[in-house]
Amino acid sequence: MSFDRLAAVYSYMEYLVFGKDLERCRFRYLDALSDSRSILILGEGDGRFLNRLLRHNEHARVDCVDNSPAMVRKAQALISTSGDALNLRVKFHRISIDKFNFEPNYYDAVVTHFFLDCFSGDQLSRLISNIGTSANDSCRWLVSDFHYPNSGFTRIRAKIWIWFLYAFFYYAANLENRILVTAHPYIAQSGFQLMDRSHYSMGMLQSSLWQRLPDCGAVEDLGAQV
Ligand SMILES: C[S@@+](CC[C@H](N)C(=O)[O-])C[C@H]1O[C@@H](n2cnc3c(N)ncnc32)[C@H](O)[C@@H]1O
Image 1 (cartoon, rainbow, N blue to C red):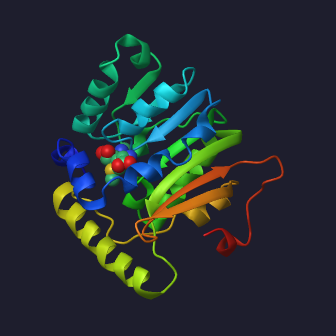
Image 2: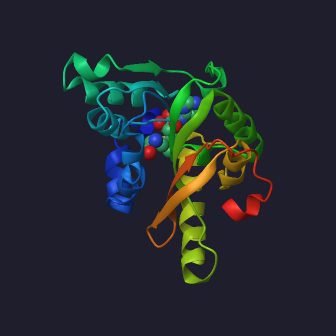
Image 3: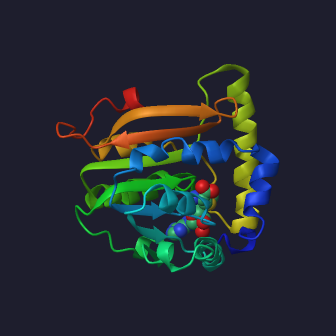
């Protein structure tokens, strides 16, 4: 899978199809990371979230993982426009997530915007377990993903749109995963609690804020958090 071919046009395509709704998802819970010091961003893409985060939080150090060289170049170029100051706080890892060394108990925030929906259930299970190991005891996690509303017209609309998007990314980015697997049960299982969530685009887009709390073990009733 590679998003290289899409990097140059990714933001334009997004605005054309969704207007500013994906941006609303990404930035919805940005304030929750105001005090975070070590942040892990997985599948950052073209750097728009990273750029906003670094300006919002002037102390955070960020590890940014993305396996697309073109996406990483775009992100680097975006934050370089402000000189060295922002660059010095970011380490880019241009590798697949399978190769990333998840340091145990290290990060106090994790960000996955429209990234987890690239993976199958088995892949998600492994990935989220690794993220859970690397998260510290009070870690926060910002997640944006696609979502099926529970019923009615909005569900049918979301089904059609999401089918179309997976077909598009299959051809344009060789995305192997063809179905949307909700990551929320896996996140809950790795010891995070859902603190808040917001929906956009008639419920098809979802932004959520998760946190590890002192008494938050693995959650048994996963259905309650999906
Ligand atoms: C759908 S895009 C999302 C980009 C951005 N986070 C956003 O909010 O739009 C997925 C991103 O994850 C990266 N990616 C996909 N699979 C990956 C993997 N296995 N390892 C690292 N990065 C990956 C892609 O290069 C791409 O930049």
